[in-house]
Length: 416
Image (tube, rainbow, N blue to C red; front, side, top):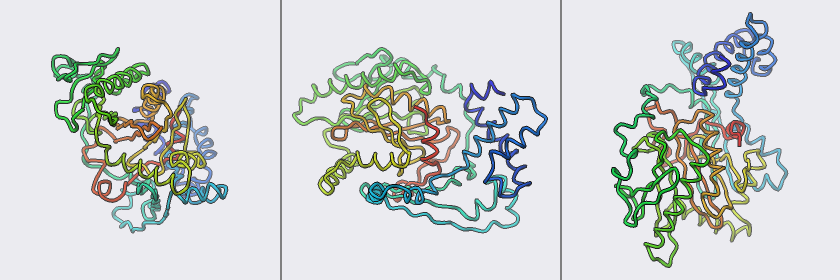
């Protein structure tokens, strides 16, 4: 069990949930709701009273502590966290954000009580649900947080054969020079990748970096650096071809596996070089420019200050990492870099992806683009590969993003 705990994250998480759920249910029966207030002490007492050998005790202790941390939801205390900030930074927070914390109430019928307890741990969690709404006043980004969303039943699931990620027999990208088109200026070869032109383009300059490694969840630092360096070389070739005085807008896109929108399993990054600034990026540029005019300070720097004051930042080399208060979807990370080229950010991107995989992320979207003097990286989790239901619905498309994950917990869970 100890070996599995350290070596197989997916199995580890499954065991943690199963074992911890049973132990915590026992504690709840004995202490009702007071177990939440002294869980660590109670867990230790109960665990060491069990007739188990030491390795089993260590394992179960980890299980329980992991599950308790999973249940804590600090975003619901955001208003109290903000009120404890120094006045200047508190005012800066409210310059950026409006927040509302409310309770959604319902009544569980008697016939559903056992099911609700098993699914959500307690009736109280279901009948009184805390909803946290956070809106960025400048960008309009709006997120609605409810921890219970991650525990809701999902009937549309498909069993995944993990061997699929290694299946190369029918893969076009495993033989890119023969089975993918080339750009008119030819291909650019990296040490661990090669370019190919996208056969169904959504911009005039739209190509691919096709990895030598088939499985997109197998990632190494030197590979990531090579992918990005090859992308920079592609942008240079496109700029020569375009012969434009106006600078082309470069955009990196990494859609990993089908939940993220990838149509092919084999690892690849998409590249676009656009004459026109993409709408959402142009909006962010306008927000930054308007902010500078109104407040005579930098939007990105102040955005970072707000997150830093709440413990929602980390740093790695020339990158500053924000665990974003208004994520577009689960576990979004927003990175600010002063690097001039994307390949100089490879170490941070690699470490974030590795950390993502370590906390159980199976599919993600990553984007890299320029904003003034900065490079911006945005990274978001797209959910379990087993889920057939989409993580994005009408709310996300037309209103606000519905979020289950907690940025504060994400900040604790990501090690750089």
